Image 1 (cartoon, helix red, strand yellow):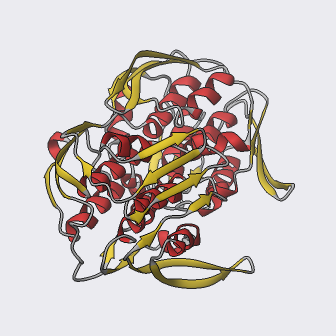
Image 2 (cartoon, one colour):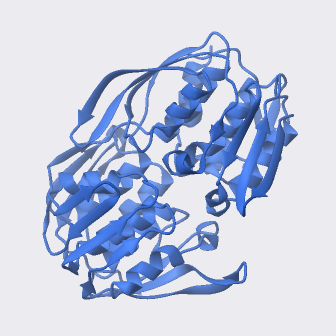
Length: 441
């Protein structure tokens, strides 16, 4: 593991296309596997997390044909009850999406499976998904540990599925992963399973279940799914480009003078465009072109030009729509005029690393003025923009989004810097540096 040097750059120019949205890719594999028929998934991202989901279903008896050079996979679905018991534990690496979503599917199977996680994911809380699945009838055993005077569950997790009963859940945590696990379990439950969201989260699962002819109804923040109906493959899915991956280029092009880039065919789901809304509020010059619906998700091209950003307040109710983009938004805030506040961001404590700690420590090293404190028992971060960040030796904390955010910060700095490790970027965006190099003038 050698430090990676970051040399400041002057501007970005050109156009890029990005591989499929990671969140949608996970769901496309899962739902295709438990549907009837063959599904070809195009623009599939071969990042580590998505490959763990793919391999998990191969271990469960699903045939998946891969042509990763063409970014295409074909999943031969076997229906709701076509999965087979794995002969040994399934390793899901550090992919929280793989683990939490697959638990919902396994809750409805008539066999036992043990799921083992990597070092980072083994430290992330799982009660939020285990508790509702137990209420529906699944038997779940996990590692128990006291955290903040409360008993919490962690991987490894053993789940025994079976006959599930429907239930109504009012979400206490704004989590698309937990919501999705419950909806997947609802496919196997008798009657109607209802999820009520207090804060709306990304709806990729609901959209894709509709595409596969699930009996699912949405009314405002209520999602109702009827169990027992087999899913039917649409035959082909074309994944829109990942907006979370796009966010690093959007911010960098906004900050660097004389920049202009085109990002083609990006996912523009209303629950995912929080990054665009916030940056526009900060004064970013971002235009959407060629907006269209690709089967089930809106997508379009983004034209981003350099601009002078000003500080803003990111409210707690906005956080679910840009939870993955908060680290790069912190870089944007550090390069903006005035002060920016990030409210209600405690969920960043339980990501691949504590992203509040990783980003605040790194940005302080580069000259940003960052303060983290509790406001009415909720975590808040305030960043006062620096006139110019300076190069420093920063750390990735083995977190892909921290690493990519700090590469962007280093490219805007006044002097050369370095980051201790960038291999973690393969978790979500193995082609990040290659795409970046193609835009640097």
